[in-house]
Length: 342
Image (cartoon, rainbow, N blue to C red):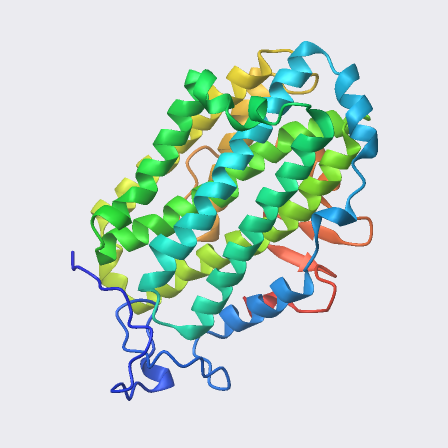
């Protein structure tokens, strides 16, 4: 385990060659020389992110105000809690990427996409503000829900602790753990939260919210691919980090995340959301965990099928066919890019 240092923002004494670039621990000049690229997947992803630019004002939320009034108390509670959790995670991720991850990245093309992801996480925060304003006369009721809901506060704390590993002790091993923590956040916690909104939409309710979540999830696909590629690149660049001890810790991180998310899902649905039984919630989250593990060449833990495949249809735009879980995308962005490049 080796301490890593934050990169210099201007380093004129460096003569680092493009082939000598590293994800962390490199010696960059601070100049974004993008005509010479080492991590081509990063620049490809940058272009996809640019092509997918959108803004919350594109989504019509007018119907949701009336729909929300017609929800059962159980549906309102699940919507509020799922939304509050999403608000926390995007807030945390915006700060995490800017202050906690990117300062140690020494590849300019990866710096670019992390800055872009930070922008998108901030945009998602604006999106949630639009959603909150459309359904509530008192936005603090949702924004401050973590102060009243002990389980939400506990879950927020558990997620934040994993990110603090790197800020409290910046080592190469903790950087890799932070990448896995990001994969869990982007690929399990967010996807689980989205499923609750889609469940209401499947019943013809809160369709504006579901459309907003579709835009957000389209961004999250690229964020998930980003960290999967960081992990895969580090496996090639620093195979010494992938010890049996580290892999065992990663598996425990996933088991803990599944247990946390299952308990949260049962807490917010209370058996009152049609189509989301406790067993379905547990199996779906286990499925998500397995897919994330397989994406970084680790063995699945649970080996269960997706119990709510219809979520894929709700997550897709009409003219875009996306298999989010396998990471293959056709006609995904407003431009065009073959995801085999990743």
